[in-house]
Length: 143
Image (cartoon, rainbow, N blue to C red):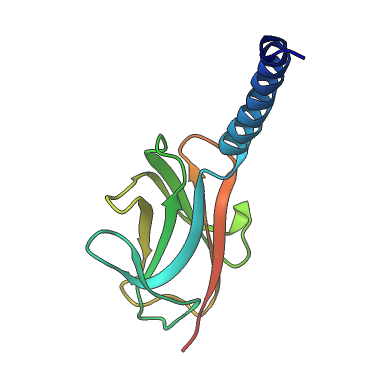
């Protein structure tokens, strides 16, 4: 087999292989969660990263929720807080159009002037104007 015949055979095979691999990774990139690593913490740093990550809080604590943006084009999100299990009837607070900070996180704070009630809480995050939960976390408030 001559070198030119070999190139004529191998070139289309390589092109098809590259297209298949590109399509696979493109599909994965588009369909994977766009916001990840949702955590609750007692504070966030100057750039907006979570500090003192925990799932147990005292009633007087401020609870910060932070989730990392996983796609550069996502600029705004909606964060929903729940008292009890994560379900529509347990919604406590809906924060719309939360913008990404310089560290690439969406962050929001839950607090109450007289302190949070003891119990189980949850928080979810959505890409703005969608109904798909990107990530969620749950936490408890105890004395």
